[in-house]
Length: 272
Image 1 (cartoon, one colour):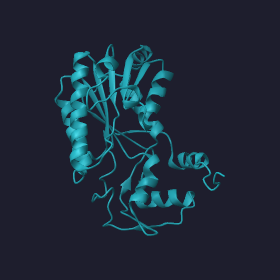
Image 2 (cartoon, one colour):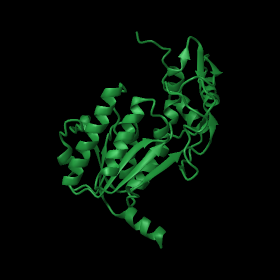
Image 3 (cartoon, helix red, strand yellow):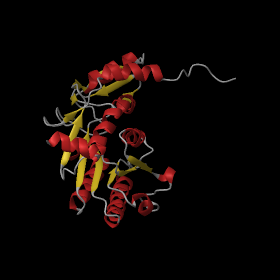
Image 4 (cartoon, one colour):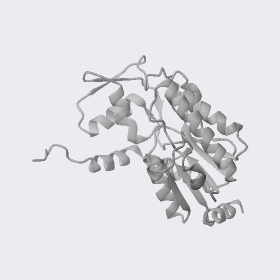
C-alpha cells in the first residue's frame, strides 16, 4: 500500500522550484523532474532570482509545493561563505513561508559536522540549523563528493608533479545520481530529518585519484600521505563516508570515468 501511495504522489503534478537550478546539480534536477511530469522551475541569478537580496523569490515561489535549495557560495572565504548561506537561507525560508510552500529540500554534505575546521562546512552546518529551526517541513540531503570533482581534489593537492592525499575511505557518486536522489525526495513527503546518499562503491581516496589520473593519462604521481589534507582539512578514516543507512546510487566510477573521458574536448588543436 505504501508503494502505491508513493507512486500516486509521484504522478501528482507539483510546482517544484529549484533554487540554483542552472548549476551542475540544479540543471540535472530540473530536467529529471520535468521528465517525471513535474512543473520544475529553475531559479537562479540567470533567471532573475537572487537569494542574497531576495529579488525574484516571491514570484518564483508563488504556487510552489516544494522548494529545493542546491545553491552554492561563489566564495569559500570564511566570512563570505557564512554570510552567503545564512542570508540566502533566511531569505528563501521567509519567502517560502509567505508562499505556503509545504516542503523545503536542501542539499548538504556527508560529514559536515566532522569537517568544521573549514569555514565552508561551518556555513553548511549553519544553513542546516536554520532549516531545522524553521516551521516549514523539510528534508536535508547530505551527499558524498561527486565524481565530477575528483580531478579538482587532485589539483588542489598537487605540489610540483606529486599529489599528496590521505588513504582514507571515500564513497563518491555521480552528479546524475545526486540529482535523481534529490528528485525522488522532492516528490515525496518531507522526512523532517537528514538523509545521506553516496556512491555504490567504497574506495581509498588516494587510490581513486590515482585511477582517475591514470585513465586521463595524467603523469602526476599520487603519494599516500597520512598527514595530507582534503580541501585543506585534516580527515580521519571515516570522515568522508556516509552511515550504513545511506541511500546508494547506481553509477559505478569506472563506467562514469569512461564516459567522462570520451566527452573531454580535444584541446591540442589550436585555432588558426
